[in-house]
Image (cartoon, rainbow, N blue to C red):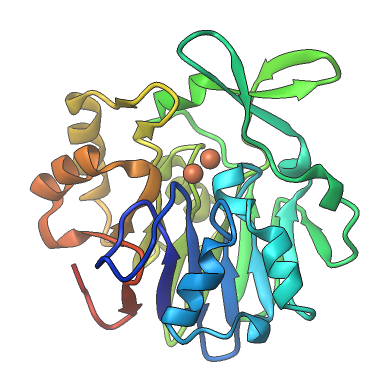
Length: 279
Ligand SMILES: [Fe+2]
Ligand SMILES: [Fe+2]
């Protein structure tokens, strides 16, 4: 597997612009896929700099219905006329973030796209082929991000706490390796990994994604004891982690001090091959 990070909150160098969001381009033996589109069309600019032709992408997976992951869908549709686009049904619901002054900010996707003929709404488990599969409906209450508490969905006229049933995770199986890719891990990275085991998938060799330990609306990072306990829990696995985006640099640095070379930061412009452990 070859991965190129098109968008993340930070960059490997000044050659790449950044934004609060996530977009990963991945080449496997059989696929050229995009995991999330970032918040805007920035991923298309960075794709050119990284020699990625987005017109060749055959599969787009949208992790969940937040603008920082699916804000670039329209830009993608303008560049690509063939990819299957997988998202959860609730991804197009109206999602909001509560601000420190008590107001609610829209953080959902562009609803005008919801009837797009290329959208494939994922069930709890989707086996795309031998290489790619998706799973959702993660249960469990271990290490749930407290930042979830400020995230809501509008149901009829009622603002209700987001249950993140619109979140899905991607598993890539290639050359005997398993790679788990999560977006924000709103349902909790430990619960997501436990769920993977519960549905009969072996522990991933590599885990990639944000852990939502930093809440942008409140500028708050999880307390150090939470992060330390999470790091200790992740060290019980044999996986190598590449984290980014909503993990936040402060929590990442704390995890790094506990996990050493078992965790790395993935920044815009970075290229990772499954057999290479970059930093
Ligand atoms: Fe995010
Ligand atoms: Fe999110």
